[in-house]
Length: 459
Image (cartoon, rainbow, N blue to C red; front, side):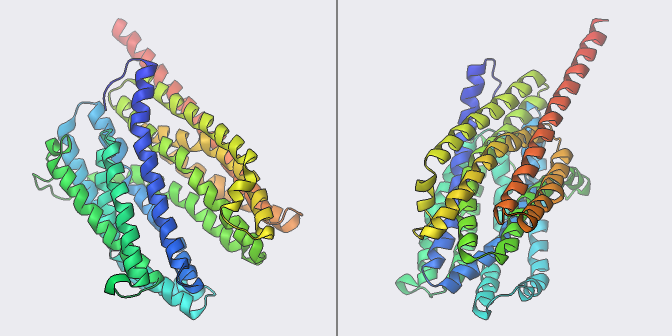
């Protein structure tokens, strides 16, 4: 990261940080896609088992990983404040915290996975595959969490291209391991869908070793000498991380879990409706990679400027990112409206499912427009370390407004399954408006403090 002086410089720096993040997020999305697709080529039961396992693991991982994202604004503000010597200590404390969280997940999972799966109405084979998949992926939880801490450290320095290369490397590793372990190629055991879990776990270990090499040997990361000194565990520092990370984690969990809840509620509808919903939601999730990446880039750039107390520049970055997100959102919305049928045909050839998917995709347009505002605003607020309001609003938007409205519309109107989408869109739109107001008020409050400070200095 470096200081910028003109809008043109800010745009160039922002895109230099953004594009690698976007490629990284799309690559991570592709890993889940290949896990599901390749498992489905074994059998329907393997596909269902992996889908159940992924639906249980993804919201949990997303929420807990959100806690670790606290390191990004912490480091970016330290760099902006020209206090680089404090960075290694913060990174090590975050690594200790990540290891503790990962170990806790493994221990808790040993006790709760079976009861959760038993409570679901699953065929025995599907249930067994889901259980074994979760066991397999648990071997990679510790390296995955440690990797994400080091990724936050690298990204906070503005070196997002490095983590992009590492993630791009992980995709072919994962696909090759999937091929070997799912289908039993070249003498490897044929594990079916369970093999996708082991492939992911091994991939996580591989990328951990790669990122450790980068941090230890490559500049500018090696200059920080993160592992040179032993630091004792500091519960006070953990508390500071958790104050920022827990609200981020819960906000992400509320957002990811709501879609799993809607999918479960849709089980009362026919197979064609469920399939169309899943197809449209998959595409909406793919497009969401854009505003989410902009959100992450804003956390880095805004945090850097806030740390340097250049609040005017922080404000410029926030509105630059939001403007870019809205512009891209509008382009995507128009494109989806015009090529609605072509997108639907990517997922199905069944005429009934195709028509329903086209209708769901129209609602996805409004998802995109709301996300184009809400996601970057959240990223900017995190750059200010303002995380409690987004957390509370995520809960209200999805669980207090979105889901109940959707349920009422689905149950008591002729909208049926589309009612759930309208409910979620309503909640998300409300959240976008509230968070935008929050960002404006926060920046005005900082402006007032700046003016008062200048008056005191003048007097």
